[in-house]
Amino acid sequence: MDLQLRGKNVLVSGAGKGLGRAIGMAFAAEGANVAFHYASSSEGAEAAAAGAKAQGVKSIAVGADLRDGQAVNDAVARVGNELGPIDILVNNAAVTQSKPFLDSTELDWAPQVDVTVTGTLRMTQAVAKQMVDAGVQGAIVNLMGDSGRVGESRLLVTATTRATTVGLTKSLAKEFARHKIRANAVSIALVQTGSLAEHTGNADDEKMKRILSAYPLRRFGTPEDVTPTVLLLASPVSSWTTGQILSVNGGYSMS
Image (cartoon, rainbow, N blue to C red):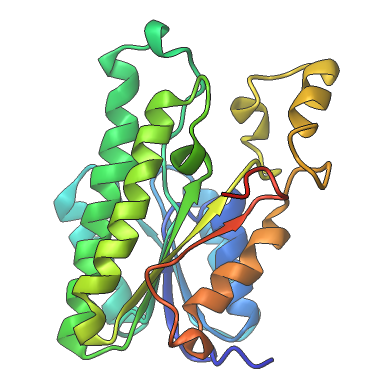
């Protein structure tokens, strides 16, 4: 199937490494021009942009601290100036932490709220404004964790921030439908990236077996398991799909 992504301009947040980088490269493989956003992983984002260019598309690495509104606005403006008006935004950047709630403090909560919630709002507002001003019939795809849908022990704060993605996605879909801008979300369980050990609490083999027992498919995901759904939701072939939360999670939750 031709996903009709060739020539589209895509911005992926948190794309210097891990799943975000894989998503950006998947778009490039489909012929889309890609901006790889990063906060601190500049080398990874620059390498990804170079790899995307090698596939014959335009690509840049663009840095911005999502806690800084002006930095976000400047980054989005740069993408528009260098690649053209943004057609697709993938909100992937987030801060997570596994910790018992009673042991956590506001210092633990702040970066999760400031990046995952407020930072995503900043990025989304800046891109949506550019889409509306340019008359782009755009697509926004938000990544979230299943903890935000079904809850998770030791991830109470992370789950709280991730749950906001549901409200954001559905509200965007309703408010921006008049502008022909769609919004959907992909909810994932554990994916094998460089941060897997952090998400599993550096579990030993026995604990990992117990964690895997919650997955009917008996394996964690890979970036390659997630990217097809992201691309499909971003694609014009999904033009009648908006406001939806799709789970890609190996059966971890089925609600």
